[in-house]
Every structure is written in structure tokens, then in C-alpha cells.
Length: 79
Image (cartoon, rainbow, N blue to C red; front, side, top):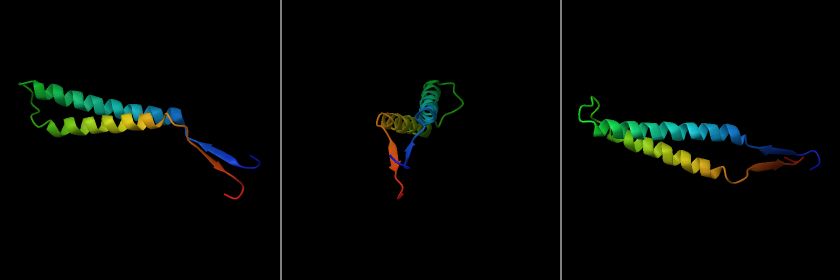
């Protein structure tokens, strides 16, 4: 490419952010399930947190899978 620019994503940074979201989702789901199973728990309404945590994890897992495909934008002199 003469004079053009190739734009690529910062895969390491994106992967780190998606892994963090997946960890938060899995942790929230696990904490809600553990609190739900404990009969002496002070937290009784953990149902929504299980679903939200599972949704966070699933979305982050799909986003991590999307990183398997290469991403590049070629910008030539004309834009």
C-alpha cells in the first residue's frame, strides 16, 4: 500500500477487558448460587443476580470467540 494506513485492533487489550467481564459474570453467578444454597444466608433475593451474571459471562464468551477472526481496515489515500 502506497501512502495508505492499515488499522488493526489491540487484541491483547480487548481480550483482557473481555476476560475481566467474563470473570465478573462467573463470579456473580457463583456467588448468587452459593448464597441461594445457604439456608442461613442473609441474602434471599439472588435470582436476578444469577441471570445477570450468566448473561455477562455468555456475552463475554461470545465476544472472546469473535477475537478469533482477524480484523483490519485498509484506508487508502482517497479515504
